[in-house]
Amino acid sequence: MISYSLEYDAGTGEDTWETLIGYLSHYTGLSMVVTDKIDRGVMYKFRLRAKNIWGWGVYSQETSILAARVPLKPTDLVASIVESTGAFRLDWEIADDQGSELLATEVDLYSVSLDSWVHSATLNADKASYEIPMSELEEVYGYSQGEIIEVRVRSSN
Image 1 (tube, helix red, strand yellow):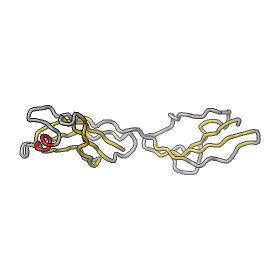
Image 2: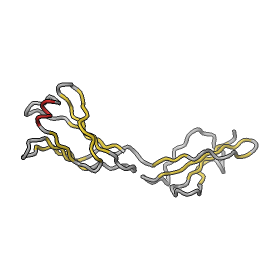
Image 3: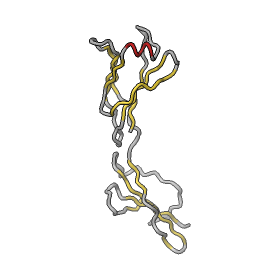
Image 4: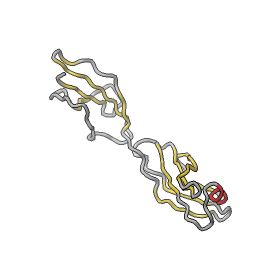
């Protein structure tokens, strides 16, 4: 094997290809990180071929990669008590999706009685609040009136 040639579609979604490495100068590495000319939220197609003493081989099957990251954490969490019901309420700002649509928001509460985190709810990604009755906090999670309630919120894509 003399060289690999890696090409991508530059995010156009069409069958036009741009060589990233290996065609004009030989490249025998087994990995490559592409950081230039990449836009968050865009799907990129890649293909690869190898060169030996007889010339270039056929292209590999195309593979697609979405330029995205794990979403950021929801921010500006505010805890309050709902006056009319006495329920515990948590509000937050929806997380930055980092290039891939948010699918859900998950809420976990720390269970005093179990001494561990317990999944409490999976919400639609566009929802930015959660209420839980005080009776449930006492009966299910083991909280007593006046204790600090531990909560964590995360988004998924």
